[in-house]
Image (tube, rainbow, N blue to C red; front, top):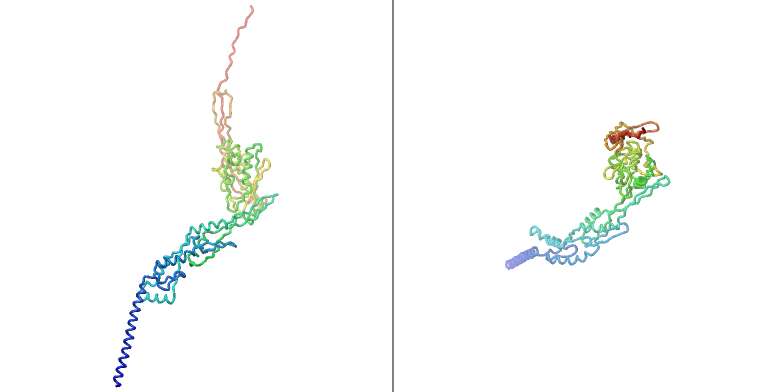
Length: 472
């Protein structure tokens, strides 16, 4: 009896074990079938979101439609706030040309859990049930839109600078203060906006301060206030009865009056005075053309450039371009003239000092004076002298004319001698010469004199004896 009972118990145990084993095998098979079906199902895995939108279990098309439907209306919301001082400008994604690639996000979501072995995919699916995964929307930026947006802000943000000014009043200098300008740095601001937009999530509202720079004017109060002392002065005399020439001297002198040159800057007479034309107010007066005085527009200009040249030399500034006349000038010594022809010959000099200089022109009566002010570094004085190295005698051409009587002559073209000239600058400290240097070597061409002489013989009157009546 006991043996039968034991046998029955064993059979029951075996049956239970077999039932359990069968159940386990069946469950495993069913689980494998179910998991296989889930793993290879053509849908996005459960537990996957795009931003905060659940797209688990949806097909790619369904997920894309859901995302577009949820996000498109939000593109009108504020995305970017640009600040400057107390001002703020708001822009949405459409204003910025900001686009989001919905389909790319869906494709990325679809590929999750579809790479690797079966076990890798199964493990990913289980992890998603415990820890859902969110795919971020990728954006692209329209650079042109951002540039256009910043260009529109320039009108509101930018402010031009105002230069400090200097002028003479009652023999004293008056200097006004400058005003700083403001300029929106579009390049840096655009780069900052682009970087922040590309690294932000869909719902982020980006707040950026505009990159703004101060514009410091070229002429500042600090710089111009250094101009205090007279560096050099030179005066020439003109014939005030020659109205056209006097007027040209006056108008060109005004063009350079008040000019300021910062250290290193170059002055160009032609660029400053401009074309000598009727439209610019110049009159007809004698000018030198090919070694002769002829009427031309702007005659007298060279007296201004020559007066300035001498003042520049005395101020010991750097001469860059200067040409002497073809014939000697009457208003400056030989070797100290500077001719100018617009578009051809210029007078240029450079401010070689460490501080700015100021040019002043003064016309009183028949005298023009050019003063150059700055700051004296030494108490040196300059004297300019010129030396005639050689007189080049003029040639004389004689033309015999049989229409003129012998012994008569006529100077048809008046000639002149030429000169080779050396100009020197002597620098004094008190009465002591500390330096003497050559400024220039110039050549003034001679001009041939043309003389006509007569060859015609005078007519001799023949005297004839007249027979007079004689009384017998």
